[in-house]
Length: 112
Image (cartoon, rainbow, N blue to C red; front, side, top):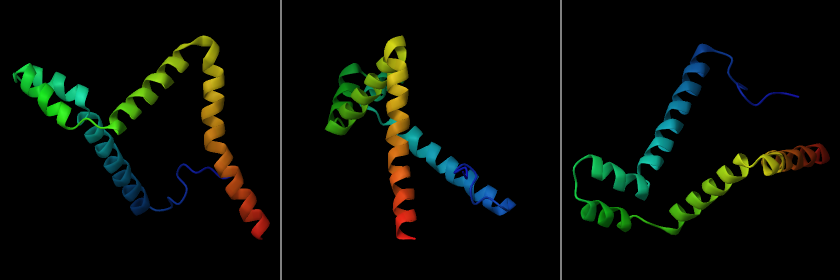
């Protein structure tokens, strides 16, 4: 079975390109975290802004997606923290990633 990590990196230029893609991905994730309404309130308070203005600014950017992501992250943290549910949750995450991969490989095999 071929590993997906590092696949396609054969030259130094490929390595530099992969490093740049990874850096861009990290920047996007950092930007997403820093744009979180809850974090913007805390950062506003630490920067000396009033609580009212930082709360008002963060409420303008609140959307259902933010709450959905926060709920999913909280749920996954709770499931990983509980000793009894950790194994089932890890199994679910692995299955969630592996089933589409397996179906794709089966479809490729059937098409051949």
